[in-house]
Image 1: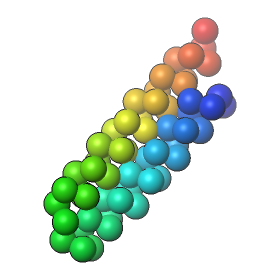
Image 2 (image 1 turned 60 degrees about the vertical axis):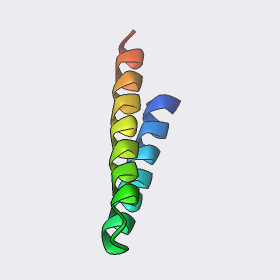
Image 3 (image 1 turned 180 degrees about the vertical axis):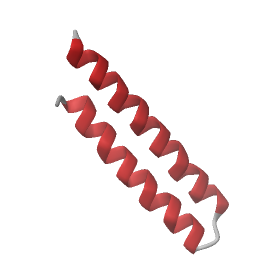
Length: 54
């Protein structure tokens, strides 16, 4: 596991928390930001996996 995978996992967790906070506080913008953070995290984790193979 490399640093890109770790950072990707962290961004996914951060995004999930932000998304849930947006739902709880009825703030659609925060919820959307959380979804974007999760997506960025997934992409970064995937990049780290590909980078590990080579």
